[in-house]
Amino acid sequence: MKISFKNALVTGGAGFIGSHLVEALVSGGCQVTVLDNLSTGSMANLEHLKGNYKLYREDIRDAAALQAAAEKCDVIFHLAAVVSVPLTIENPVEAAAVNDMGSLLVFETARQLKVKRVVFSSSCAIYGDDPRLPKREDMLPKPMSPYAVQKLTAEYYARVFNDLYGIETVALRYFNVYGPRQDPSSPYSGVISIFMTKALQNQAAVIYGDGDQSRDFIYVRDVVKANLLAATAPNACGQVINIGSARAIRINELWQAVCAVCGRNMDPIYERQRPGDIKESLAEIEKAKTILNFDCEVPLETGIASTFEWYRQNQRSEDR
Image (cartoon, rainbow, N blue to C red; front, side):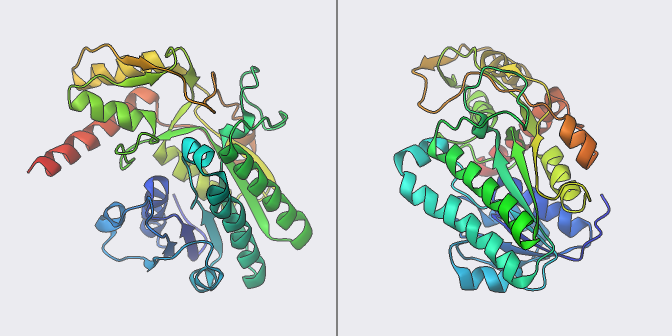
């Protein structure tokens, strides 16, 4: 995709989604700065870029580091966050310091440096367990976890900075993102990455609840495309926009699909549903289509096959 801006900062740029975004920006000829404290991100995610970016190994709560990293930037892509719902339940105050105050500092830095636009990575967790499907941006938020509250708070800050200070902001509500480089080592990681690893190791996956819950999965390449579109779309300022595939699959069916691509046939292990988990999720993406000219291009079957190939190759490298 052609990139019209020259300089960008990606907070959380060494993470799963952030590293794919950095890769796309570098490929598009953009001068990229990454700010990441590497608490969950990894330099291995950026290794293939061979230093074609500037790195600040700092925390987004460090105002001075943010100022230095954002200097002369046209766009800030704000992805840095405590992204684990269970972790925010266990440590809500610590998570809020990053997700609330850290985000506020990003917006304030953009105001002080007159950065043209901030694209904020939000979450469909904001909708909670509202039974209505698909999820629309005009639905009343119903957060069920500190994580969801913190993302909603940052969305409100984004809108206020847009309306009050004239800093263009766009909030993208991601649904369930998956793809290469998603770390499966944590129990809080994306379910597809965990399922892939279990299947490759010929182990049964753990499903929390009855497996009848549904999710809208979107491939990371489509999420990157949404970010790049949101950075320049003229009518996106001050908006909250769903980024999903508009297709849902049940977790039991997902495990079967992963087993099929891995050549396995195993029953999962079921455990008690985790607090804060929602039953059903499906994105309405008409707003993304209208405002961003966005549509999901990668079907789930294709994305799973591509992701599996990456995990298979990665496992081979680790086994050497």
